[in-house]
Each structure stands twice: as C-alpha cells, then as structure tokens.
Amino acid sequence: MIIGLSGCVTSAHFDNNEYAASVRLEVHTRQMFGFCETPSKIKLMIEQLEFDMEYLVTYTGFLEDNKSTHEIALILQSQVKELKQSYEKGVPSDTYCQLKLKILNIEVQRLLGAVSKKVK
Image (cartoon, rainbow, N blue to C red; front, top):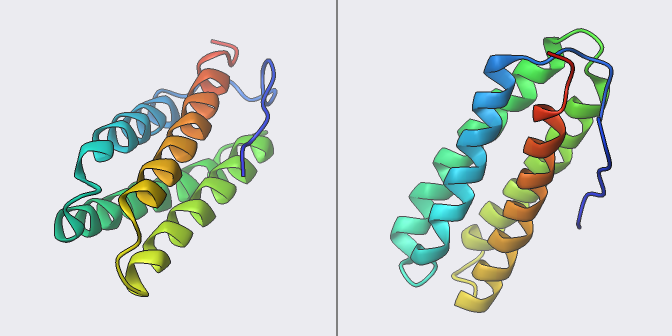
C-alpha cells in the first residue's frame, strides 16, 4: 500500500519530536535494505523498527489537531507488523524483503515531507 500525501497533512503545528521520530524511521528503513540477506539481523532490525513505529503512533496520538498524521502512522505501523509477521512465518525471499522495505521507506519519506511542512 502506498500512502498518497499532498501538501500539508494537517493544521497541527510543527513538532520537533514528531519530526525527529519521522527522520529516525526514514533512516532506519533505508539502512535495513542491506540486511535482507541476513534473516537474523533483519529480524532484530524489524523489532527496533516496530518499537520506533509504536513511539510515533503513541506520540502523534496525543498531539492536538494531528489526526491525519496519527492515522498515517497507524497505517505505517500495520505495514511494519505485516513485515514482521512474514518473518514469523518463515524467511521470505530477499526480493520480498527489499520491496517491502522500499515501499515502507517511500511512505515514511512522504510522512516526513508532510511533517516538515507543518506551520512552524
């Protein structure tokens, strides 16, 4: 699933913690690309990614006038859970891993772009 974002996602004001959490997710998903061939390492990275997503979902849920960003975070979280479940069922192909991470990274980049355009 690709999330379509255009312009400013919400009327909420810029929040440094939300921005930092989004940057962390972008860096994390981008760095994971090189580890799809190492299931033991990628599983650990997915665990950390899941923790970072939980942080963003929880944090955005408490920000005022931030419903849109929170809903996007929930969608991203479901994508991370789907990736984790695929590894719980076995070891998916490297191609599957790469594609899921690429899609997730694109979605996170869109979120980051939207968060960065909030009123400062």
